[in-house]
Image (cartoon, rainbow, N blue to C red; front, top):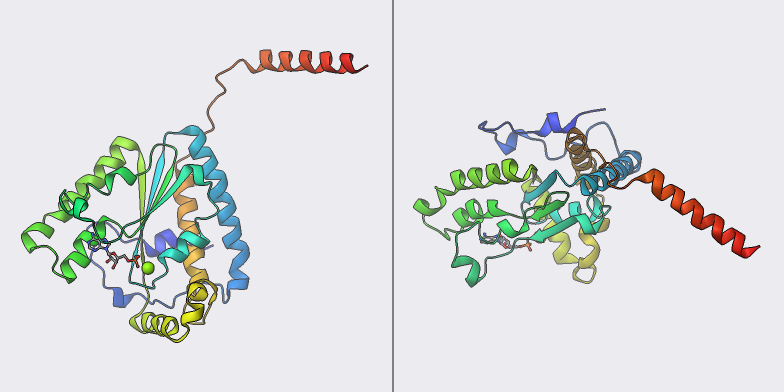
Length: 255
Ligand code: AMP
Ligand code: MG
């Protein structure tokens, strides 16, 4: 089985060019149908691992989703992360900052949403917008945004070391042509807009590959955490005895 984490990881401090990545890559499977079993297995494993994570309450996982409009960020939340137990998993959408957000440092609105020990947090867009859209639309001067790279690294180091948080950052790469095609669809079929991004598995889109690769990467990451269910804090033998006594008493009463 291919290890998508190895294939897609961008090593710290290395430079990449997106044009060198084939956005139509889809690994060994040719169709959603053939990938489905593997995706479902990953989702099952993810569910079991999250149960462990929640019970153990030592580790946490932050999943950051970035990508152009229509890249499929919402799709990842819907298809890959919905299997998770909502009580241990929170998803946050980062939209344009409010007036109150803007009156603070750029990480102020982000920090409350990082995962607590034992839980998973998903960022649909993130603090990376503060060095992306902010630069593209010139929302802050260079002397402000240029400092943010170090500030982001410090922030991520803080939650990694202080709170045992693993961070998985996904950039969902679609080609310009693919993005235009997806926009066109939205324009052409306004009445069906609500389902477009969900149900279409066009040849060039390979949304199922996105689901496959992301679910596998999350599973591998969580497996490495080597999480253990906590030892019972009560005397099980005693409780078992009490239970059987009560059960015997009930049976005797029925006779
Ligand atoms: P969507 O993800 O489609 O709901 O759109 C959210 C919008 O909020 C996008 O246009 C983002 O670029 C914008 N946005 C998110 N975070 C920031 C930020 N920190 N500064 C400015 N715009 C942002
Ligand atoms: Mg969107």
